[in-house]
Image (tube, rainbow, N blue to C red):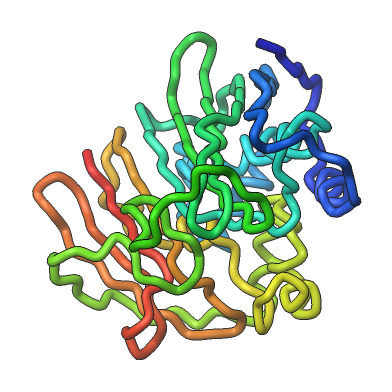
Length: 296
């Protein structure tokens, strides 16, 4: 196994510029290189966490949102995906699902050791899926784990699966409802999302993917206008539950249909014996953007 050891948090803007530049990639059939990207001793500032919380709806506290720890690992994901030995072009990758486990609250005063790796390259009826797995430790204690599933629509990997509905936990961003459940969800709020939400989230997260920032860039990748970040959706849904979150939990979100900006969306939730079920839909409630399952 190869280890890429960083001495500082890389800038996402430069990595996106690298991702958009034409580059020769190894054959996807050859699989993934056995590589990890690591950064030790990273510390957050109160100002950057406060700015993130403001955009996503969290109340500022000593305990960091679980989705903020994804933000910390995301530049390491980009470092891995823009490396010359990564077989999938990062440009145009679609984030289809995300799973996180918070083992205990991470504190804003702590120093974090971050590590990211890629695994589970596999065919999908619309292209190729890959998992980017992150871990956050405080000294030797594992406090957070995350798994982001991305779809590359340009690549192909044999054998192709039989056509059919997408499996649970692997939405494809095509608009098909995923994670459907018999649980009755009560509407808990209508959220008006401004046209500049993508730019605001990019400013606090470092995720400057142009499909979220510019309608012309979004159209180049097949969207009618700029779309909200999937991880903003995840964070905003989790923030709506912040006051009721336990110290340790697992949360999964499946992204079904992109949220076009600007728009109005409906948040619905139901408390379960072991956690929560929630969804984000369009205002009419007939098109699901994302579903969330949280278990304790």
